[in-house]
Image 1 (cartoon, rainbow, N blue to C red):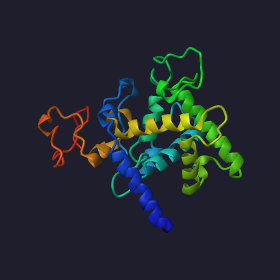
Image 2: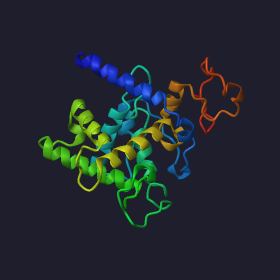
Image 3: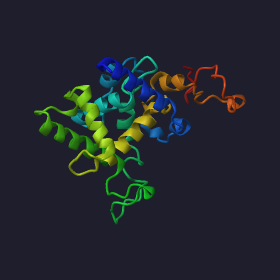
Image 4: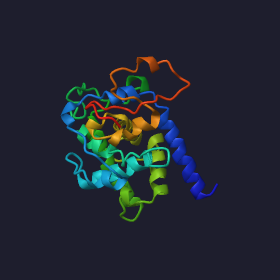
Length: 241
């Protein structure tokens, strides 16, 4: 398989994965009204450049944008994460009580528990992402002649992310698997959230999967499985896609 065909196969495989996610209603109803109103985005470049992060520093945000672009790339099936404002969503979400650990149990003991017990570490969500992004860039600089993650080519970025996903990537101060799993979760939430939280610009993800959004009544279609929903989605502000 040549490189172009491989890229197409990978992109479509990812898209099918996100289209099959069952957590869309949960992501669409995410709490956090203090995150503010949405801003329209028209392209991947606009999504990356028109928002000034307030939690992540510029280097961290560059890495975040690059990671989101690899997790959900833009293609003919639907918009990518950067185009949809996912990095913006994540940065804004880091300023909520959930992300800073205010509503987490953050007392010890801190230990490596079995997966069914969930995360038992001492870092809050925003610390997990901040420490992970710094550690990833430090590793990249040592491995790739001073280049940060955002400066690597796509193949190198994807190789590192696959290693992080499996826990094989040795990051300083944090488990790469923990870092990757929480960042992937944030990317999913941002991609399918209501646009008021910064992601899912123009309801692109909802349109892609045929999700009705915050429509007042679609009870007649809940059990329909053989026909696509015929109406465009509506966000919480009442705007139609």
